[in-house]
Image (tube, rainbow, N blue to C red; front, side, top):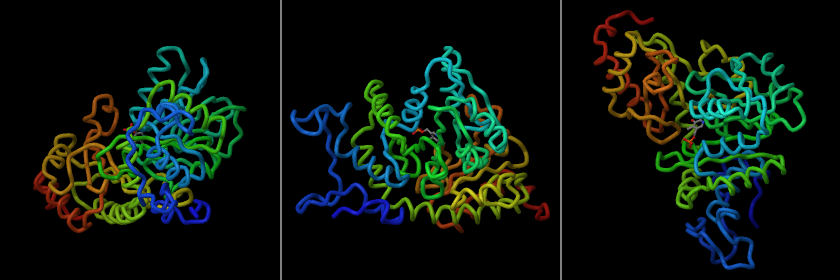
Length: 381
Ligand SMILES: *Cc1c(COP(=O)(O)O)cnc(C)c1O
């Protein structure tokens, strides 16, 4: 018999979910490239009904969050499907710090008169609870990108809200292994499967998961009508990547803690933002809400944007690239991205991968000493 997600730890579920159980069936979900199927069965056209390969990914992610999942072409496609649920004239509440794609999507909708946006500081729990009473869409992202703020999801998701209102949590940074927003009472949890679920920087996919049956149907309908369907190869790769997600996350977040502590003591580093550090403004909330502090940290170097760019140019093991949640460590200066100029100019966002932590530290230290040889001579802070 096929095991059910409720009977297993999430670690075991990741390994076993989405597999067939009939004798003779392949152990792994097959890659089924199909637009249409012979009429009379469960599926006729894949944009409406999916493929067995998408279904395996949906089963896997749905089990991780104990909900029903809908897979999309990208994280943004999943997010857009949630925004698509908003009736004209809605009130949308967003955090002050959030993924630039979400901020852009919300701003574009506001410009067209579809909804009004209100922004709240991520750590202003009272403000969020107050906003829940009037908002149609409460959009949270925690930990946030790139300042790594942690929201008190427990308190916010339990706050009274308008009937029919949606509380959505972008759970990409935490993953369901560190935080399960639906357990706190969120309506829908979003994953960019491009990141930790895929884990190898070789696909784009997104998943929305909910325990609200009408919303699940509505999200599927949005996908069908907008055509934001996931690729079959991408779903296959995402399932394959997810098999090792628990191992990857655990190892990388152990390394992230070590690197955060060492960076905090480095002479060239002005500030480290990592929810696992006692110096982080939302550390107390993070300890309560998150099972683990994640694999992403940001640090500001002394010497401004020029020094930060020099650090990026001089890393060798860490790759100078955007995105996060993959086996390889990546780093970039976020304020260099068009539209992100409001961020601290020397902030480097580092996504820690599964390389040896000693090698990673030597690489970062080396790149910093090339960028600013004089900083080495300062006494340790
Ligand atoms: C990457 C990312 C997204 C968007 O996902 P895509 O798969 O790139 O569309 C949304 N939210 C967060 C927090 C992300 O990191």
